[in-house]
Every structure is written in C-alpha cells, then in structure tokens.
Image (cartoon, rainbow, N blue to C red; front, side, top):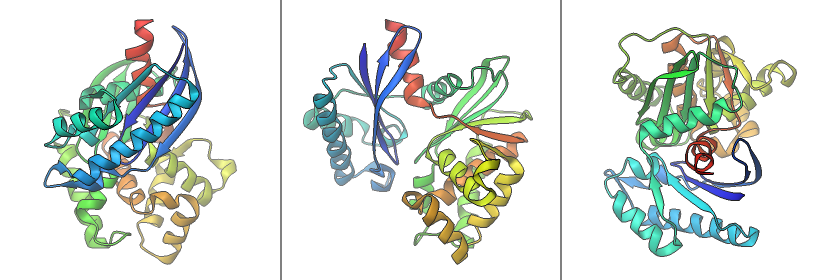
Length: 301
C-alpha cells in the first residue's frame, strides 16, 4: 500500500510518501515548505495570514499527491495548531479550503511518535534521551530498558523563541540571555524530580540535522557521522553564539534557511544535553511522521 503523511509543523510543513507493509516501510518521496507558522502567532492566535499560509502549503501538497495518484493521505498538526487559541478556526478553514481533515496531536503523542520513529533507525538503543526540537515546541522522552519512562512536550521552539526574543536576525547577548531564561523556565516545569544521567541523546528535526552539518563544517566531515559529542556541541555553540562575522559566515554557508532559528534551536539542545549529562548526540533521519505511520497506519493493516 502507498500512502502519504503530511505534518503541519510550526517551522516547516512536510509531506512524505511511503510504500507500507505490515512490518516495514520505504520512503518514496519527500517535500517540505518552510511556512514558518509560529511567526504568524499574535496574542496566542494564528493570524488569518498564517491560516492562509497553511492552506496554501496544503494545496501544494494536494497537487503533488494527486499527480502521484495517492489517495490514502493522513494529515496531522503539532504545536503549530495545538498551542494556539483558535485551533478550531484554523482546522475548519483548512478543511474548507484544502479538503483535509487535520488531526491535532497532543504534546505527549508528538513525543511518543517522534521517539517511535527515531527508534526504527536506532532499534538497538535501549536507554537514553530523545528530543525533537521544533519551531514552537520541544519534545523530550527518557527511556530505559527499551521502554518510555517520561514523555513530555515543552512550549519552546526555535522559531517561537526567535519571534519572541530577537529584534533582528542574530540574537544579541541580552537576547540570548532572554532565550536561555525561557528555556530554563520551561525545563523546570518538566515532571522529572531528578534528571537521570544518560550517555546518549537521540535527536530529530531540523535543528539536529543543521547541528550535524555545522559540526562537519567546523570539525571536518571525516570525524562526524551523524554523531556529535557534548564537547563538540559546546565548542560549536560557542562559535555560533559569538555573534561575530565568522559565526554568521558559517551559518550562511551551512544552513542559510535556518539563519534566524539555528541559535535558539542549538540553545534548546544544549540545555537538554546539560540537564541529562549527555556525552553523545546522535541524529535520526526518521521522526514524528514515521512514528505516526508506525502507530496509526501500520497497526491498522
């Protein structure tokens, strides 16, 4: 069976087309639109312009699925529509304009789906921390003996922090301090009495992929293979947070589309790494869409 999964995220909207069997799947096609929906949130509500942006993106994806002959299409939204005051309005307009029923998943579900997707790549990883750093939220899972012990979502994301805290493109020191304060405040709210120390953190999402690209550029591609040590991350962070022309040049060379979100994203990652005493960060190519596929679609076959 071929099917499509559309993820309406706070920074990007993504379409993935899969060939699915009961116990396996293959990605046939991928497309993304950097919609930046978190940047359209005013006083807690997604603006009419933001809703139109989401509809326009979904209409583009609809054209693609029609061209590919895909009828089985699942659409879900994460913090992009979950953490706004006018969720029903946005979902209703999307149904009216694009014809898609949108499932708005909870923060817990997003964390579980992200972890499930990542573990299809790292199925031998039995203990560690998982995180998915998105545009408007970050999901954190602690797992041990192959089982989820804690799964939560915090309302801090790379684009949301940029929109709330940064006046231009690159955050000044005072703005970095404000970003850091917001991250620490939300991490304190996690229902974790004592943060367990763990060697490995598995990361998914654009921040994680950009972090690996930056590490390869800075440390040399031969020394990096989708794995970055906490020491390397600290050194990388010190470079891109320096605010120098060199830092700006590195970001523009490696991940120009994330010029405004990479610093807040890396700061979220750094805080999670420090809280759990992580020694190594690995980045998975599969995440919430693949987890959704496994949990919601494959189980029904």
